[in-house]
Length: 396
Length: 211
Image (tube, rainbow over all chains, first blue to last red; front, side, top):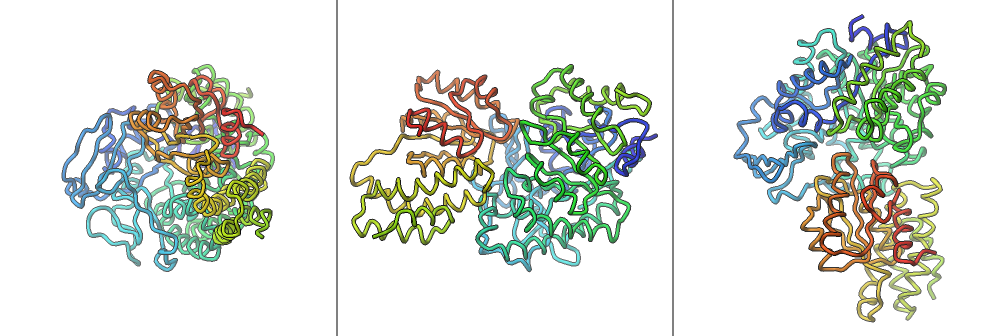
């Protein structure tokens, strides 16, 4: 089986020739481990595509996640200068904005004071002007949405810029046998980022009707984006719904706000692309809402943070929702991958494979992203573990 | 006469306008500001803390309660300042360098204020010199550091060492999603706050004022 076939079988609840392995790597890991500068990786489509492929191959993963949108090919033309400030690099743009690029973490765009990030107030938001919010746009988050530093407005019917899907096409062309996954932000996550988290969470109580209207509007744009990603060659779509766990909201709020918009985007996507799997990434404690997650219509669950980061163990999740959802994750990215030894990783992976492999539908992965400073020798143990314990004929 | 139980209920319900109105009314009626704080605002936030720990309420409910408490506190603080009433203690609070996440830090700050602490909030992405400068300026009983990222949790031991090297003899507490009690101990912290109410409990314990 090719990696792509193996992943497809696992996402379809079949039993592949071995348990697939695929982790989402924090962008900082690419920054630290590829020798390519954070500025290039963050802003340049081919540079990002190349490091995605390089680490997928280095770690023997069966798939990779494209977690940045394609970039304006003319991004360099908008730079005024680049400054080295301590360990960081500051990209000063022609319009005065400044992107601070740390050596090991996501860049962020600031006002010219290099300290302020602007967020619109909830009262300024008109749901009719929302369609999709992209927090990782190279010019930062904007309302109403604009793309990059050029004059490209985001207006329907051509809301998404022509370069939006370039990374998917780039990677797809160079890795035909690898499972290529694209990412969208859940409407709930988009609103959290747009308003800043605290303000957004208070808005749930202050004006729930308006919040629902915003989420409904953002769902429309999300559906269009997902369909575009699938057309460009994505084998699966990940919904990043990081703020929908118990660390942030109750099950009641999940039911009221998250469930309707995620159900809508998945149904809307499936209307056009019924055979492309969709799965959901929700961080932290989600043990009390696995069935609600299933009710969104998603095909799989990413993450499943185990204690102490979360509260779900794989065997329990598999028993509760494994008949309907594929599961990717459950290894502790902090206490095992980052802080553990290669032997710790191998032993933990063995236990996850033992719990996840029977009946198929399991992809070995860290729960949340692999942290930037995670030792490569620990990550390499994941592939070694599926080779040793994950083959169809091997029963650990 | 304002019913302080009613005031606490407004805090619990997150009704900022009504909280402010009742505090103002209480002060206008000549009620003691400390009593208004303790039996109204702090009593309300204590209920919020208990419910949060019991998973009966979640972050949004805590945030609106803290916002209501703040509305009342803003009216009381000038009275305290004028009458020389001292806070329980001073906490210098911030998210460590490289980390721009502030929701947990803000929650801790609001709940510490609600418990009677004076909080100096340094914001996010706080460089070590700024932290040391604030500590030298405010002589806090407690320094509270937050980090959400695995990339920035390593700043905790560095900051703690720098604080001790600079002669800071107060208490240091840490918190944030990837942290744990074990990490806090290894980093040299005096306490680990698993969540905002727990951070308040730890802060009270650190200054010997635990209930």
